[in-house]
Amino acid sequence: MHKQARSLLLSDVPKQIKMNFSLKDKEHIEAHGLSIEKVEQQIERFQKGFASSCVVRAAKAGDGIERFSSQELESCCQAFEQNKDKYVLAKFVPASGAASRMFKDLYDYVEGDKSIEDCPKVAELIDNIDKFAFASVLDDKLKASGESLSACLSDKKYKQIVNTILQADGLDYGQSPKALILFHNYGSQVRTAIEEHLVEAADFCVNQDKHIHLHFTISPQHFDKVQSLFNEVLPRYEATFGLKYDIQLSTQKSSTDTIAVNLDNTPARDHEGRLIFRPSGHGALIENLQETFGDIVWVKNIDNVEKDALKTGDCKYKKALCGFLLTIKQKIDAILKAIESKDFSESLKQRIKDLCENTLSLKLRCESEFENTETYFEYVYSLLYRPVRVCSMVKNEGQPGGGPFWVGESNPRLQIVEKSQIDLSNEQYNKVFHSSTHFNPVDIVCSLTDHNGKKFDLNDFVDENAGFISEKTQQSAKIKIQERPGLWNGAMADWLTFFVETPIEYFNPVKTVNDLLKSAHRPLEQGV
Image (cartoon, rainbow, N blue to C red; front, top):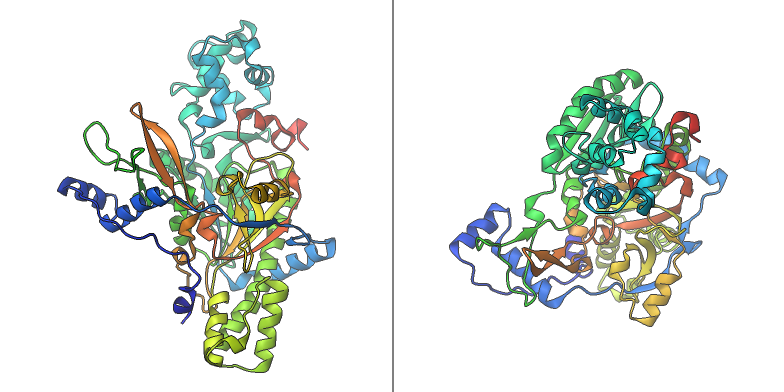
């Protein structure tokens, strides 16, 4: 019933075209887990492009963004505590990114002819090297080569220090994932970014059986190193918290890759004549999220962690966001069950009206527009039968990130929209974009199961029109690549979405190595 009704709401699938692929091409396509039809659709998308988002207005506090009072915060936390044991809780952490961009300034220094004076970011790192959590292991690596950190500093051997941080015979941080970088120093213990997620989850993501379900997406080349770290540290954290960690590790599926094309939209090929496929961006992780073991799942990036001193307040908001979600989900579930039981009463109609107009900000069509009462309730079912998410929003103080907007002219809905999705040459859209007051720090709690406890097929709720195309260089030739709709943008576009303002002090991403010098990451004696 709901799928038929939803077909009116989903984006149109691009018209299929035919390509003359060779037998080897077809074998290559199938080896990727793709079909000829899917690749032809991707090429058609290159030809047609992606439509820009129709941003009607920016979501703001009081108009799309909830702002909890202290009483509401406590009430939502209570709702979480009262209802959490009815669901399986889990946490999903995109952690496949390499740390190479984190050390870009260091690479520029060692690979160029610049002096330390010409590289202020590197100079800042050197001046504060003892404040980094990896300082001790860096010293050990230098001693293994007959040097020491103090000696290199004294002798101004700065490039040797930097190379030891980056290179494989040192810390190998240039090729490591962010997950394995030592972020925080607690005196007797140092923790990697991935360990901080273990500690954080022990505060709010504990199930009734004392198990914590965590899902990390990892690049294939880093898989063994991450698994090795877990083998080393999990017994210690399980003993500390008296809990059991159930860890899922997954990689981005090759079946989500997209074909690359030349500038004339013909399939691009490498020097051996093979078709070129590229990963389709973090939107492909909707497949990994689908496999996460949990009814209620928190999503948070690997590098957005803080020292223990800030965790209590941060985790309180995570509980409140979930309590807010569970309160809404229970109302939706009750209505869906009533519709399935054919309870088409006037009281149910009023509950639907109150929920849609006052809570979900959905504009209901009049019952008189439908052939009969049952058809009307099929329509309502299609509106409500969706995954639900509550997204943290923080005030924009210049940080990059997707923003909260009302999208769609006839019946605007809340969406997270990236700058790249907006046509800034359109005067109205440009004005709306620059009026935005908040952005999404990728701190989201999701409900992945329906009113009967069945997992949604998340691919049913993706807006395929929300991707983008960009140009890259491949073997000195220009090619075009295509990225699927972003995980928290187009991949969740047809979810029921809510935004809640949270304090910016709980947003502490590490985009460059020197971000670890900020107060949320400082060594113990200098911490907040």
